[in-house]
Length: 155
Image (tube, rainbow, N blue to C red; front, top):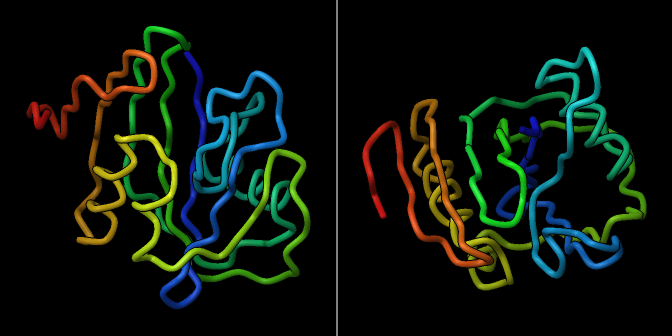
């Protein structure tokens, strides 16, 4: 099992997205995702979030919120517990990322670029300002086969 963070950093009506095209054997290859990564030993979700955002973007978060936990189950990859955050405060200058290309994407375009199907579920929860949630998404390959929100099957 893997613990990770993922953050959607907002600037007005745009979100900072990472197009994962640089890393070999990347389970997110060619998908657009938020910013984050795997926990290191002794890190809290917030420690991991702040470190990963700084490493991947050069930005230091000054305002962020934990939105929920997403459990990813796959027939190809280890189970992942992703701590999902949003952020709307930051300082610093954007830098190049060694895992892909960073780009500010308008909110209305986020569901039109290549992404995981389950991302649509939690992005909509974020945009609806849903209370803290637990979402489980199950995949066969790249195909979402089941989604459970707060214990209720939604797909």
